[in-house]
Length: 189
Image (cartoon, rainbow, N blue to C red; front, side, top):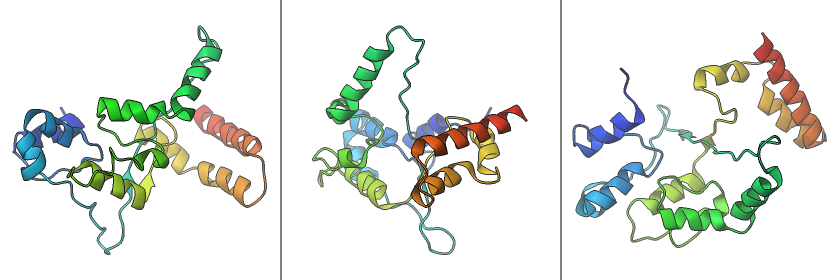
């Protein structure tokens, strides 16, 4: 049996370890609900550490994607719902109301009183770090081992697609088609 994120959180909450890497707000949220004094007085969300050369470490992050299946029951309505969440700002309200453990997926949503409240010892620091530190996202929706096959591809798939659009003037569709074709090649190997 391995050590999971839940084990990481539980060890901290049980006071068996004094520090954990936790890129979400799951630990502070649990403290706020069950031990408010610890939330405000006895736990700290600190700056992300520096690397061995004193430089900035990349914050591990993830991007949650919405998928609408063409063959689903009502794809037009599903697309309309996704647009409603994103365009009308309801995603920000959902995060505020639910007191979710994750920061908003769009930078402009972080710039709100809920996330930048200086009286909260954890949310504001997390928001500032997210806004100022480089982040590494998993773009593929695969496990890290599976994803490595794409990272090691020559030429690099995502970097090549971005370069094609930004530097070579390709359309996003053309660059995406090339990237998808390369991914299919790798998966067929």
